[in-house]
Amino acid sequence: EYLDYAQGFNLTNRMPLFVKPSSPLSLNDTMELMRSHGEETWFDPRGVARSDVGAGPGHSPYRWRPLTWSQGSKSYVNERTVGTQQTAWSFVASSRAWMPAPLRAIMWFAPDDSSTGVRIP
Image (cartoon, rainbow, N blue to C red; front, side):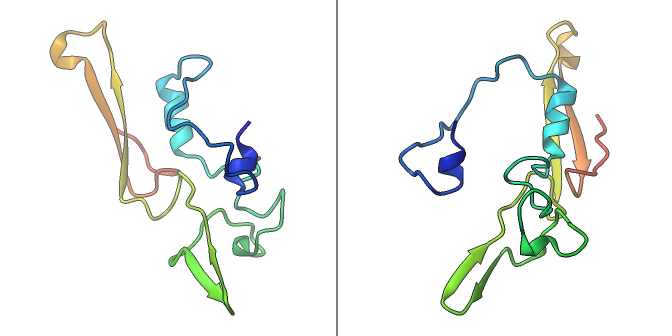
């Protein structure tokens, strides 16, 4: 619905700041989203679905710093994916209403890259 806006073709079709999911997200759904590089979408940075010079011959989803560069008079930017090696840490918080008050909230912490980091409570 908002792909044309995200691609920069129709800037009047603004994306909402928040979207209510069609069904509740589980803890594992959220963790999986934190690992995303946009694989199998228009935004896939690996250069498989569409040409992407930044992917190189190995079809890497990673982009190294700096994320912006210039060629001649034009400037370019590599969009940052959710799962990136430039993440210092990430976490997923969960609330469990069935638990006693001191144990209701839990935070799953992962150091470094959110796409490969092991989350521990």
